[in-house]
Amino acid sequence: MKIAIYPGSFDPITNGHLDIIRRASKIFDKVIVLLAINPDKTCRFSKESRLNMLVEVVKEFKNVEVDFHNGLTIEYARKHGANVIIRGLRVVSDFEYEWAYSAANEYIDKDIEMVFLMSHKELSFISSSAIDELFNSGVDISSLVPKIVLEEYAKKNQK
Ligand code: COA
Image: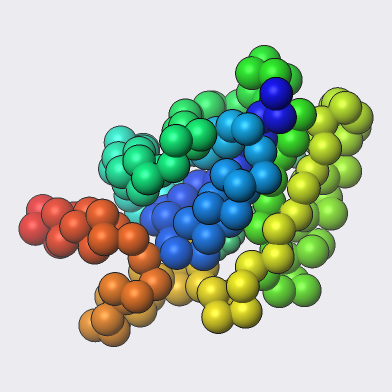
């Protein structure tokens, strides 16, 4: 069984991430979307809120699950019998981070492959920070994120 992990901060999940999940779900038997911790980031949405958004978004896929892990993604992959870690590539500047990420993972476990999916051109400008900035500037982001993200933004703004 080919199991793939798709890790990220998903702060929040965007249609760019969703596109990668959709395509990965067609390639692998099972995909685990893993809410992981990027120690360099302070997240705008709580862990619960990000998990809620992910769970809602993956409901449409029969072979996609959501999980959370505080630790190395590659260790999670090993423990869960995953053979692959998926990453999305948008622009050339992603390459440098992905190269280091991939090299560190290879150092730990050579048997787990990194698989890179190229983002569709029309989604390649999206990042979670860009979404947040556009939303906070009053721009309509409804065509860039799943509906649940708009709902979580609305909840956040009520507080
Ligand atoms: N569509 C839209 N946006 C995308 C995207 C896509 N296909 N792919 C990436 N992005 C965006 C993300 O939203 C994020 O935006 P932001 O920086 O504005 O928040 C940005 O690109 C970077 O994404 P990514 O590289 O996936 O970083 P991340 O913080 O989301 O995830 C982890 C990094 C969590 C996967 C990584 O830190 C991790 O695995 N941590 C666990 C510990 C570990 O194993 N560390 C490795 C040691 S070397």
